[in-house]
Amino acid sequence: MAYTAVELIEHKRDGGRLPSEGIEWLIGSYTEGSIPDYQMAAMAMAIVWRGLDAEELAVWTKAMLESGDVLDFSDLKKPKIDKHSTGGVGDKISLPLAPLAAACGLAVPMISGRSLAHTGGTLDKLESIPGFTTELDQSRFRQILTDHGLVLAGASPSIVPADRRLYALRDATGTVPSLPLIASSIMSKKLSEGLDGLVLDVKTGSGASMARIDDSLDLATKMVQIGTDYGVKTVAVITSMEQPLGAAVGNANEIEESVAVLRGDGPADVTELTLALGELMLDLGGIGDARSRLEDAIASGAGLEKLKEVARAHGGDPAVLDDPSLLPVAPLTATIEADDDGYVTTCDALTIGLAATHLGAGREQQSDVIDPGVGIILEKKIGDLVNRGDRLAIVRYADEERWQSQKDRLGSAWTIGPNRVAPPDLILERIDSSNFEH
Image (tube, rainbow, N blue to C red; front, side, top):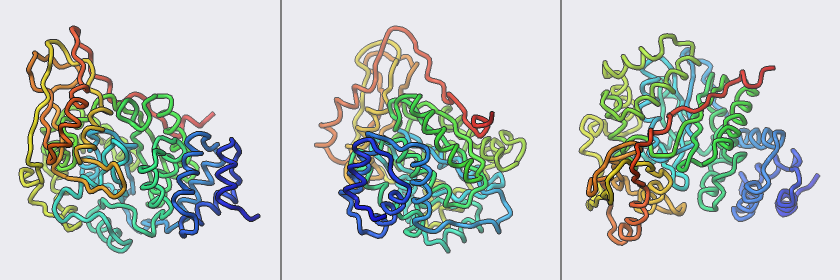
């Protein structure tokens, strides 16, 4: 049958089910450039409103995956295990986790993304390291993985090219919060890596793509089902994003905090989530005594050495990992102070993420250039005791006009009350293939 983009858009807009052949034609035509961005943006918005059923999602993901090359690392003898997060504020977990997992014997072919809306991107953080290139062809990608057991890169033009275009389009058109589009984007990239296993960190809360835990569970279930159907051992955990992870929100300052984790003196929440996800990765790879191995890799410095080794392989300057004070820092400084005595009852991740984005740590449009030195350091979080005038956060910025437009917004992220509130649990739920067994 012959299709047109307008017919398919209208069909989905009106609540219809997209035919499999129509999805394949749409993704193929968009990839080759015969369907313009504005029509795919309209389809993405129709999907935001109407969704995709399980069969549509399976076909959509397969079409995305088959829009480019699928990598094959079957010749590598190490278990090939990756981790992916749906994104959050201050979520730098991949930066300490990936080198620790590699130092413990896994091969980690990590294809990551850039910032979306108010959430940071692993690639943007890595590019805070001077010279670090995340754009690799398949030959170089394979070589770094073979030599070092870890590669940290973006999807090359030949890897899921449909998602490469659609990912940026969603960020600029208000279509990020669509469970089917998120699931297909993540899983098409991950399935292209030739993995044996995959750990998914699905965020929930104000700073996540999904604020409601039911939506996060739905997304996690969809992705675990996709991975299981493709024969990749897949496990997902639902983790809290009510407040930022760690103290650092930005790019270069999140590299510094990641180095602190690898040195054994990082924030407790970032360290614990790193170890918990690392345990799952090692378990999927059949490596026992996982927690002890990961802790030993921190204590011995093996994890940090692996990150320095891989940074060098990517063309980056490892000196900044030995001395993070060499990382970029924005020239201007301001503080947010408490306006009352009591306990911090909220430290809203969304508000902080939006403020950081508008200050230059993220993108409001596809063409925006991120300033790696812009960032926020949180000094008080949920449950902390404060007195009036205590510093809640330090802000580094480069544009005074931007700061004036954001300082009241940022200050509103903290609520102070008379009674102590416990910080939210880090890990809320777990989903794996057993959820589909009867």
